[in-house]
Length: 396
Ligand code: GLN
Image (cartoon, rainbow, N blue to C red; front, side, top):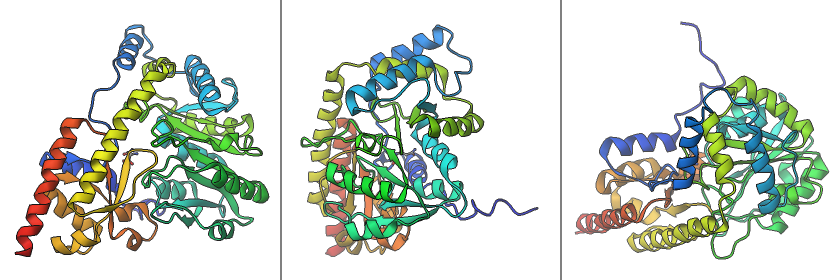
C-alpha cells in the first residue's frame, strides 16, 4: 500500500473525544469533553423543528443563510461592538472548528508562523499543521495565566502571519484584559500580522469579568478574524453552526475555502440559530447563573479531594494540579492518572498534556468541565469522595 499523507501521520486521536468514548464505554461521568448534559433551550429546539417543517432542508447559501448573517451582524454590534456587513464580512461554517481551519487555510503560506498561547485547545495544533503553518508557543503562567511581555514580543518576527487568541480561554478560564489585547494588537500592527480570535465562550463569564473582542481594539478591525458559534452559548454543540467575521478582503478567501470544504452548515439549524441570537437578556443571565454555581461547586469539591486549582474567570473548565494525588494513586503521569481516575471513580477528565506542545508540561494536570446538570455534579461529588476513601485505604 502506498504511503498515506505525511503531514497527518503525526496526528494522535483527539484525546478529548477519546476520553468521551472511554467514558461512554464504562457508563462514567463525562467531565472531559465540554458539552452540556442538560436540555437545550426549548425555544431553539422549536425553531429548528419549525425550520425543518417549513422545508428549510436543502443546501443553504454556501456562506450562510441571509437571515442568520443578518442576526449575527446585529448581535455582534450590540454585544461586542463589532461593525460588520452581513453581505460581505460573515462566513457561516460547520461550527467554530471549521471556521478556524478555513481561516488558517485562507491566510497561511508555506514558511508562515502562527503564535499560539499555551496551554491551548487541542485542535489548534492539528489546525496549524493542516494549514502548513509553523507554530510558536507563548506560555500562559498559572495561577492567573498571565503571559510575559518579553516572551510575547520575542515570538513575533517577519514570518508571523497570525496570532491565535481564545478568550474566554479553554482550558485555563482566562479572560484576556483590554490591556493585554492592546499589547497583542500593537505587536500585530508592528509586524503586520492577523489576529484569529476564538470567542466561543463569550457569554460564560464570572465575578464581573467582561468580554472584549479583539476586533474592537483600534487598528485591529481590518486584521482580525472573529470566530464564534452557537454551540456553547445555546447548549447545542451537535448542531455544528459557527461563523467567522472578517473584513471583505479576508472573508472572500475564507468563503472559498469553506465552500470547497463543507458547502455549508446545516440549513434548518442556521434558521434556528438566527432565532436564538435574539433571545432576551434573561437567557444569558440564567446561563451564567447556572455555570457560576457549578463552577464553585466543582472548584470546592476538587480542592477538598486533593486537586490544586485556580478559579476560572470564564468558560466552563478547571485545570487541576494532580501532583499530590498522583503519588497516592501510584501513577506518574496525566494519562495514567486519567485512566486510574475513571477506573476508581467513573469520572472522566482530559489529561493535561493534550493542551501543550511539549507533553511534559501537562504531565501533572488534568482538565475537568462543569457544564453539567446538578444531578451529574452531585453524582460526581459522591464518586470523587470514593477517591478519598481509596487513597486512605492505599495509605493504611
Ligand atoms: N470544546 C470542547 C472541549 O474542549 C469540545 C471540543 C470538541 O470535541 N469539539 O472539550
